[in-house]
Figure (tube, rainbow, N blue to C red):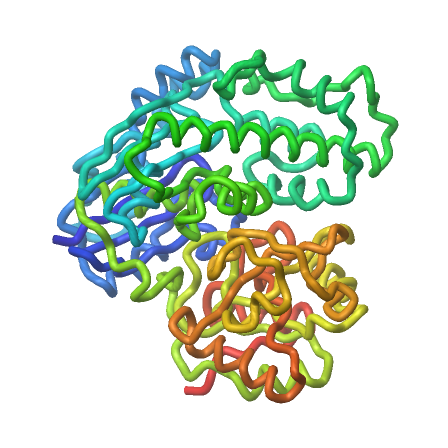
Length: 506
């Protein structure tokens, strides 16, 4: 039976089609519409999905009327009394141009069950604890589960208005960034700031209560735009923002580790961990957890709400999926042989070069199929990349390193990091300046032949030519725009920005 999972009307709409233990297709709406973090579905993504079959059942990632109850409690009356945000009406409107197609949503799954299922049913574990941390579901903001076989049992939860994810988003907004989109920028800013115990105390006391749970004092739906800590008032400088970011990130790390300590208490049966929710994209905190608390940890490459389109379908399916058959490469397919020779030739010239080949990545990070690449040894590469991508100068870039060489260059917290989910100190920052952050860490992607044969061959060839077993890898997009999806997008990128993008040999 083919099951279609849908996430929409929140942020980063997505769909996933599964059958038995296979993930047939998964894609983000933004890649088709061109609207970053698009919350609406579109007909184009469904037309691509139909190439893989018609679903027998359709599942939605949360319960809309339960969500409206929470919105009523939060005073979001405009959201409560509108029918525009009801999923069935939205789906019917999107698919209306297709004659004789009457697709109905058959089941609705709790938001945090969708998160928990997305990570557990794609994991290598048949018994595991599960932690989900996000901004907010219907009411849950943090949940801890025990999973065994195909059964999930909720052991602990925290509910609205207490939300670590919502607090982090509110502080993202306070720093002039876009909430539910730019949290990773705050994480990157943190390394430029100074740790200040007095400031940490003020931030903590202003928002959190002192006990084992991650409880907050404020209704963060009202935001933090007027927040101005008395001990460290805003002077309008970039350094003020960096310092706030640094101490916000530190507190976030404390609170995340509290949750995993709680998980050990309420799920003592297993040392395995599956982690999901938007907060699971905080790779700095992830590194602390996997190093100090749960060495056996699985994180889906798409742990945010878009990944819940997979999760709700997986929950109804009730069986483990063979995730590693295709890995994160589940979207639109640009056919042709992976362009190893063309890309290496450009890299050896010192040029920036794009790759758009094979199936698009499912998740926010490019992993070699929709990537912008460069030589990590170049001193000016980081500045060139930030100029092309229209990004802030302080932001770092990630390395893609041959898995067998990763530990030679980085102090890795894990053996594999094939989805860029952890940071690691670089042992030779002077040798590889383009991929080192200001604190000499990198968000590492390890690459093996099994992960991505074409990309592995490219890096291997670059290694043979240069003695460098890695390349700089960033997503093939410009700040504020979605990642390149199809051949036309790739051509447009070359035409507009003057960077060659190779789509492969036919």
